[in-house]
Amino acid sequence: MKKIIEKLKQKEIEISKNKGGFNLFALFLREDSPNKWDLLVAAPWIEKNKNNALKYIASIIQKTLNQEELLKISRIIIIDLNNKALSAIQRAVSVEHGTAEIANSSFFGLSIRHAYLITSKKHITNQST
Image 1 (cartoon, rainbow, N blue to C red):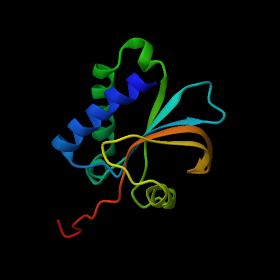
Image 2: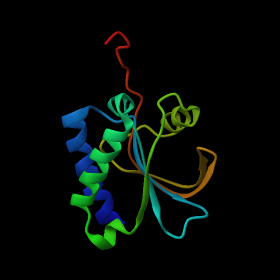
Image 3: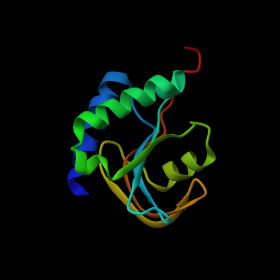
């Protein structure tokens, strides 16, 4: 998993430079998951066009990870910026372009066996733009 995390961290930095920072970029392994990880993302730029953002992130992930690594990723989940669980995770862990691990927790109403947070940070956005 360390190799996948390192690859994703580099891509998260690259995407942040090109599109804007993430509020959340994390891999979660749900308690009921058969070792398939969910990539959770949240960012102001994603909110503007979720479908395009999802396609963009998916294409970068597909180009970055090899076939064996891709099989470990179940799905990409866009988290709404107003989701209370997002605020809770940002209060619990603050990291940007790094790696923080969480084990045996509950977020977004799910039991999480393991999580790697690459970015978990509240961004101040200018609402008038």
